[in-house]
Length: 76
Length: 242
Image (cartoon, rainbow over all chains, first blue to last red):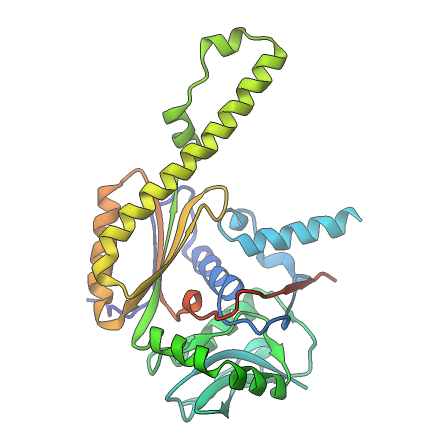
């Protein structure tokens, strides 16, 4: 029997997700959206946008924001 | 030189093994007050959101999860040592309260997705009368359907949230519920679960999935308590696109 403390991701899919995609998606949702914040001291770069693949923005609001930022820049 | 900050913890006097953080930088302990912070020394002025950096941040926080329950910092926290010491000093009572809340617990995440079409079609079906109307009337009818669809989805999310809360109530210490955080999500829930209740909690979630087979679940954990760490209501995230 597996340890109850082992990290797992379970889904009943709307779409087909690879486990690695889900793991990354959930990790991004936690590390980008949540946690302690020292006001005004979060500075991240989305230049390396390749990790944001089709479908991620369905669930991760911060990634949606990153997409929007990129779209605005591209339209300028 | 700045410090990239991963998490804050109590009861950690040393790292058991070398840990690499963002940019592959070594992680060290910084002690202030009676707390320990996991940090890396960086010369960069921003931290790119890459797969590697995001996973490294998560891995560093997770590296001490079997020894204590840390308060994770959000990805991208880059400050001077003095800023960090001032932050901890000024907010010590609030940080102590947060540490007491999460002590002995982990976070579990539940996201529930329902197809919009399922909700709207169940309550709003285009009528024959709508089809016979002119362009203006048809436009207004469509707007009415959109508004009513939104109300139906709000009501649906509230009902599902109450149902889920009742199921897990005995297994959790605290929860954060976000109704309809994105267009397709009914809700995103974070549950703070005592470590010896993880198995019980998982059984409850399994029951919930059987009970509502038409709902799509994304269930994950254990996580460090990212959703229960923040003590600030105001924050500012800067995206740098280059």
